[in-house]
Image (tube, rainbow, N blue to C red):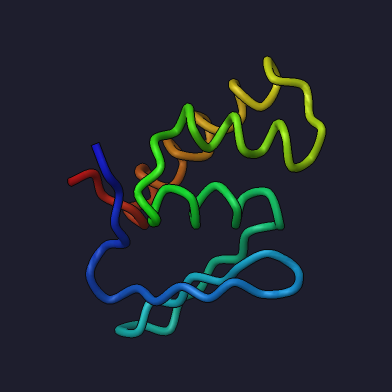
Length: 86
């Protein structure tokens, strides 16, 4: 499975995380650094479990906690119709 932004969205990583902008209505969403890493990983073709591994290593995080947080964020991004599965 892979993920893509829904039509009309642009994505930019920033020093503080990332920003999604709806180019149609001007609405935007911000993500903190870890959220931005999750989205960037998904858009680059990584599976959610790969993203968990990367974040656990990069941030020296608790694997169980990260394994719970990543699917939650993915579900929230899908529920807000910001990303779609291909």
